[in-house]
Image (cartoon, rainbow, N blue to C red):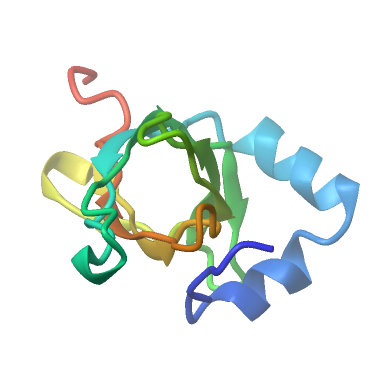
Length: 133
C-alpha cells in the first residue's frame, strides 16, 4: 500500500472518474499530458540510510473535476539505489494557471515503504507543450 497524501480534490475525482466511460471521455476530450522529473527527499540519517531517489515520467490524460478543472494520474517507480526502489500512484492537484494561458500542476506525497523507510516528495509538473503557440 502506498503512503499517499490525499489531495483536497480526491473525492471529486473519485466521483467523476469511477466509470470507464468518464475516463474514456476525458481522454478523448483532453489531449495533453505533463512531463516530470524529481528527486525525493532524503531518508532519515538515524536509520543509516541517508540517501534519496530520482524519478521521471509523463502523466496520464486529464481527468475532469465537477468545477470544470482537471487533474492527472501519476505513477512512478524510482531509480534503484542502495539495493532498493520505491513506487507511487496518485493524482496531481488542479491546474495552476501561468503565463500565456498555460498551466502547471503540483503534487506532494510519500513513496511506498521499502527497506523499512519511505521518502516524501514535492513536485511541480512541467508546462504542457512549452514551445507551442
